Image (cartoon, rainbow over all chains, first blue to last red; front, side, top):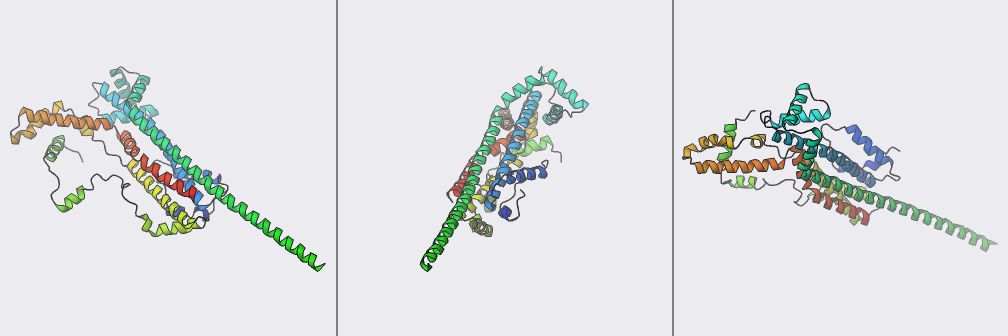
Length: 198
Length: 174
């Protein structure tokens, strides 16, 4: 169900989540729309909270990518430390070459550089990865904490959305009960008038 | 722009002689040096027009005036935290590649050349080399740009925790 303009009325007052240059706005928006479509009674406040929830999911994605990047960073650091002949090529050049090598998009010279560095350091790629994991453990733990925090934030937001939903249901139910009481009262009134007239 | 390694070292050694700002303006500016994200300062959005408009919009959902003010403040405060989170994530402290990759032992002749005007002694050169070695250790410990942004963002976890707890409490109690 598309969300109309009125229920998005709070959004302009909250700074919209910013995307990184390599991220797709369309993907972000489609995630938001799919979350909004699951709202049974979309109210402006619920929509504002769902938009924050979507941002949390986006942050989890970013931090998950970061975990892999941390490993790559540590692998490049280890390679440049272990290989005696690689100081000249610079840590950054090695990082870039390794990144392309692991993505499978390395050029011939980059692949040769990494393979030579691995031989020089007397390591295989899985060995290097295992050692890098140990080396980067402190920072990987930090990223895990960041992901955990986003999960907890999502839980808070979910509870808030549920409470808004419950409140609106409660109000609707009370309205219905009131209407039922009023109609009962009016029927009683009509009956008593009939009794008097007869 | 390429940085001459000798010039960079000279700048660093001259900076060591500095005893800080002298003028009032300089002191005021340097007092903000350690300001990272501004989340410890009191928020000012409660005086803004958008805060009032947000309260009016939330009031349409049947919340009490007190709850509306609380929810609006919670929402704006949470956005403030998340904006700071994004800014910290996207602008980590830059990696000083020169310091990280320099060979401190091999730089001893440069140190003695830099210190020569004041009549360098082996002790001075050793102290300077030890100083740079310590700085290099610290620089390497911080890791690359991804490690830096992770540890910088990690410092904001408690602000996020407080921000979302405040917002969630305001909505549920409203």
